[in-house]
Image (cartoon, rainbow over all chains, first blue to last red; front, side, top):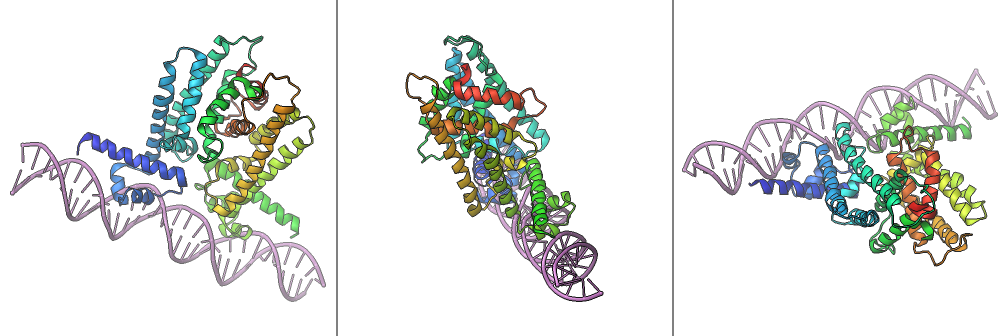
Length: 199
Length: 199
DNA sequence: CCGGATACCGACCGACCGGTCGGTACGCAC
DNA sequence: GTGCGTACCGACCGGTCGGTCGGTATCCGG
């Protein structure tokens, strides 16, 4: 079996495991459940991964890579800070709501079960994202094309955490069949960030 | 033993269990752990509660009661809609950050493990809170003392979910020893909601 | 002082957990 | 065809889980 098919089968295991972890929770999903969903025995599953922790870690790492590729990289290519922030809000919401990428939801919800050493590595990548967003917020506030009478009272750091919370909490209440869908959500959250509830 | 001391011991069990559930997670905390923390045997613990699920449900119910008493009731007494929203933001943040009330964090994080019938009852109370906040948002936008040139683009529903996310996500990153503390956070989140990042 | 309810203990149960291991079927290189 | 590595199976391991149960100490009302 070639290198690529090895990678592919690992990827498929991760996708299936992420789906189950998101539906039932990490602790409530047994390795037997994951193996059965892949039509595999538990022993066969352990041929591909050393431990349940390793699977969770790889899912979270993959989630961070998705974020890098689909949010950060496209956003970095945009010159104007305000446009950059608008794009980040849109792309981040789209990634969180993408039905394909359940790794994201698992990463948002299941950080407790990871052993400390692995958790630190994930948290480190999360902090990088926060710092990027914090710097972007500062840039928008300083160099915006808007005219402001005074320095903004909201610190970039608080704004970054607020935006992150708004978006990362969506998975807790979002129903695709509900009346508040992704395409309504993106402009409304954008307006709220830029101008508050009176925007 | 009188009725009150029975209630008291149940309350103390719930407080201890909530602390452990918040620290280690619900699934990762065994009934033995809870019993040991109370200097009780597992059998003794089962004298007070029928099941682990019942403990989790009571913790969440208690969390909703705390929210009613410490956020909703004080807020309802305020006449002006804008003042009412400002108070809600402050009180809700304070409740989430209160080191005494770990039930809140458990309610925010551990809804998956609850059996469906119990989860429905909790979700119903959460929806009541959402509806209250949604109506308050609409009231603020309509009857505010501010002057606005046009109808707000942000719907009350989206604004309600955004505020909820901002606040309920705090427990994921907040460090009491960090540079962004509760007393900084409250005015900044308030300003952000009312006026965006340029406020 | 007695009797029943209350609070609690500790041994125990069956199920299931994450993980291991010996064995094997199969495909590909030579 | 032979040899070998990969993928996989299924039985099994020690341990832990939520929950049960028979028995007992304690306390309180009469």
